[in-house]
Length: 325
Image (cartoon, one colour):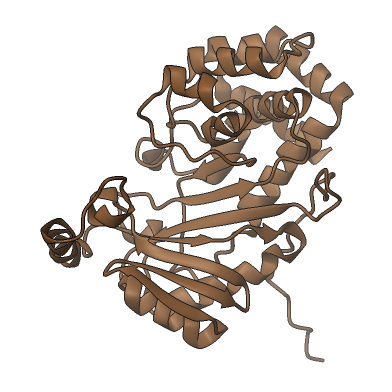
């Protein structure tokens, strides 16, 4: 008797808080890096498969509007190749030079595909993008021994207040050793694609059960220890949204676009692997949300971390039991 086919599809988990303060389903934007097909060829293939209106912003940056899965952009991931997007740039020689340089650099500089905010309960639709990229011959992390291509999530914060951002930051800091191990178990890649972890002094400060600051204090503490975008959970866009003046006082020239979202940066986009999905990485993020939503468990894990006298790898084993329970 023939055995039934085994499904290899991975379901997308839903977070404990599905709706925002307006009662709408929360959204998440997704960013995927790859090399191989040009930005133009990629967006044309996306339009053919998903419909929509194609707009050229410059020779290496394109937008697809009103596709079957929403708006998308595809561009070479380098600011110097898009002078028209920089304030004060004039049309003329500089954009032409950037365009020519972009064609040469396209063999070395990855493309970045960015989705518009997508309702979290429709996140599985974005896996269609991966099928299109594979058909085009797009390459990812496993094809480049000395380069890690990024996968980023930008989930909307469920409640725009200090208590919520503090709980999420605590939860992420406590689970970070496990998250990093699961996202990139190959230790040779840890030096290539990962952002720097949060300083241990900062983690020990914020996971104290009685650490419940107002938003101004939270921002000041975060910037004192993390005046950089180089964190796997980059809070600068969210903190800029809360208080742009306070953030700019410390980082006047940093490229930050304020928005009510977290920015979760992962170093592994395996776009050429037919078995790869964004679901496992998303589901681990949902583990962060679940712990953040359970304040009693969050405080207990924080207290356990402060009493723990071991290495990060050992702590990862401890918190793995927390997320599996």
